[in-house]
Image 1 (cartoon, rainbow, N blue to C red):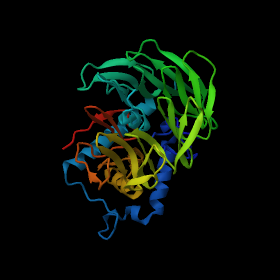
Image 2: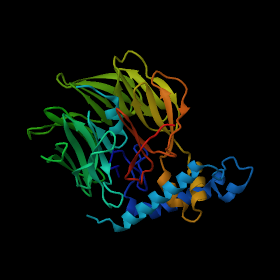
Image 3: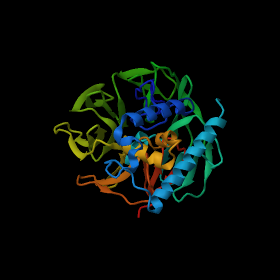
Image 4: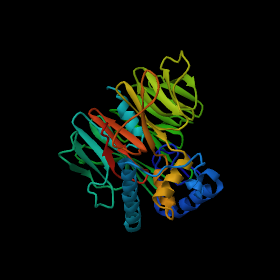
Length: 398
């Protein structure tokens, strides 16, 4: 089984993608999620009902401020909305690091020089997502596409490039930013052996990663061609493609059809910035020069790094909660129904900030109690609180 959002391989009993945080078949897996969380709880002495023991090293204090109260209320709203919509939803030229950061984090927000483009609920009472736009200040809200299957977007050459997911089928399409002139470029099979990962485009061609194969599809409806295989993810930068395999990062000259190794490292969430590539793995966040003459430098040592974004001179990242923290907090909220709250908090954590040049990480004081993904644009930042949430909220720094 593979993640419909980023293409990563998943365990058969997965309820979320460990790479991008996307919920996996939420309607069918809520019960199994509860069972797995309950099993985890019973097997861990620190996550048992001993949370009231003063000697417990993993106790969660009773909330004493409005932030914890806000978290309880927010999670309750999300869980209620998820349950309601689950039961009622039918079956049916400049390389801005913010652009790639947003796409890596789920592609739920894109921007141009005037507007923001969201995948989410147009109205809080809606049961299906859509694509809509607003100004940077949140005004001039306009529906772009009512297609609820659009799962990921990016702005390319003044248009919206998008991917849809339906059971058994992936589609990559392109449309004007007002939703007009909507065209499907490729249609792909989705099953246990076939999956779509990254996609991007130039003026003349679509590049997409399907079954670990990086393929090129001409915009004039010509034949597909295979460029590379054994690719995990990639960045399109003019006539160069930067891509990661299971163990290395390479550059690929499209015109010469030649690859050069930049460094050897497991790498996820590649971001190109200032002639360097930033990436993460299980050890934290690294950067490496495009020249390939230097080893990758570990700039954030943190095994709990979730999604990250580069914005100006800073890197913002999610320091994800430990499992025992998640379950104890979920049990505090609702002892009987804690599993659904724990599911809502998977891959969530606190926002931290580190100078791009390196240095100590610091907590970020904001209106976001927890976050699972960050999205940036020239005037600010949005946060997705939970893998079960279809709404982004504006981050207000304190």
